[in-house]
Amino acid sequence: MKKEEYYILDYCTIKNHSIFKNGNLIYSDTESETLKGFAKSIYKFLGLSYPKFHKMDNLCKLGFLASEVLIKDNVKLDEDTALVLSNKASSLDTDRKHQESIQDREDFFPSPAVFVYTLPNIIMGEISIKNKLKSENAFFISEEFDTELMYTYSKILLNTEKASSVICGWVDLDTNKYDVFLAFLSKKGKIKLTKEELNKLYNQ
Image (tube, rainbow, N blue to C red; front, top):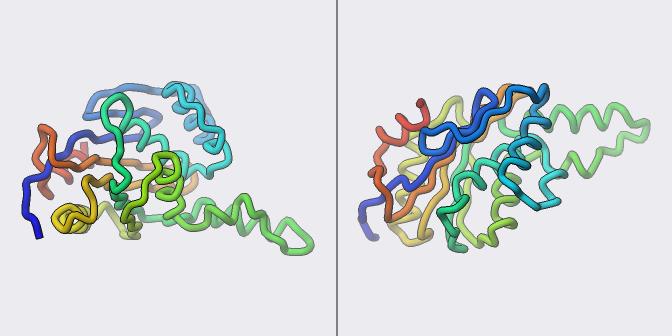
């Protein structure tokens, strides 16, 4: 097992109707009244052309958009870039919509378009499809951002050469309350990867 030094090359945060990359505000939208509208405005701001985006649920859109901000203009993902994500609410926001779709139908047949997003790890599937990843991935549920878990799991993947780099972080959504933080970990960068640094960046 290799034991090299790793770094946080870039990080992205989405909160309070704003996007931050490496601590700098890059976009803010105070006009959109819904999360769906906010996500659409980010999509337009980034100049994306990916029709499948519009079919995603809100949780998936947030994680997908954060990953696009993270790699935009700087990083080309290797196919073995691992994804290690977590949140508190799992896919609860979509689970509620799924339940409503069953209740609203006399035959109790759920909407397939909603059902497909009733697992939070679909976020990683969408990111992987867009970037052609064939990598290790894991999605954890915890009460809060678990720096120890994110750091340790990511380091194991890097040290055992299961991954050349890792996108790790927190993508949480419950109703309209959202909190997103992604960090790109690799062998290069200016910020040395430590548990303390990862926790500090999340809490900025």
